[in-house]
Image 1 (cartoon, rainbow over the protein chains, first blue to last red):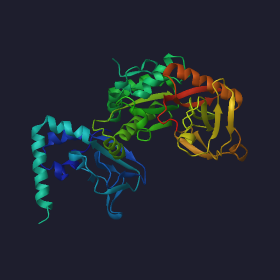
Image 2: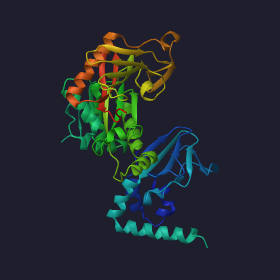
Image 3: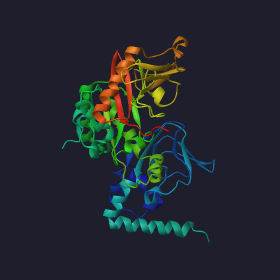
Length: 136
Length: 272
């Protein structure tokens, strides 16, 4: 299988303003990635390469070594990697056999560079996230 | 130009990566490399994304090899970058056949696009998009395998240094055993032989993948190469140097009594 579900992408705050066609374009560049039970998917502090949506299985999120939550099908993580390839803010470990759809910074960036409308909508979403989450 | 070629025809490092082109050159020069197919980075990416025509093209090209297969990454980057990517990009041994090849290529593509690979690339100043070619070869299932330096990498002496263990060479490459250690001069005369402690052996599984097994007690400290095999390795070193130049780092295997060259690259560290 290739691609990701647009229903799932619609729920990602970064993609909240995108319409169905724009979501489909982004979904089309996702690639399947499988992880074994216990495999580290992303490591807090590591450089970031990709954003993942869980297709099946479960994964556990840790911050500073403390378990935060369990992710399942339809959940996602690592979306900020698509913008700045900065450091991971959490560790995510597969807690079962896990199938994800992932997209790398390298595949996402040309989509945005070639489509100003998508870029502008992402900017709007980022500002909305910032207004919600910035310290007061 | 096709982006899927017989290993013998892999000539462009920008397409196929340095490992594929190095092995292609070895075949063209008559060195004993197992037959194979070279896949360009864009083909690997297309197959990783489950592109139907790309999968079909790769499957048809690889099918004549039969199976099982060794699927090795071949970094497509700056000249000489291949060695520096050792440990970053995957090699998958004992892929049963073409049915499992798509998943193997997906895994290798992701290994070049993983967080650890990206972190490594940033650390060495590489900010370009990763691309990984692949070499698909018939898997050699060896009795003995290991590495050989055509010149002593520690002392710089003009002699072959050979490290060997039972089964697949991964036991040596991954540091899972203390391998036998041999020094052989250019004429093939054995200068030193020191038995290692080869407690484990990596073998291929019929259903794919490899397994680490315990070695029979009598073989743990028994030498795994005789003088005739050491002489043959020395002659292989000479042929590799005549093709590629001095100071080579070679991966080799002996299967059914035949010596195979698996990889040949420049030594990345040298004498004191």
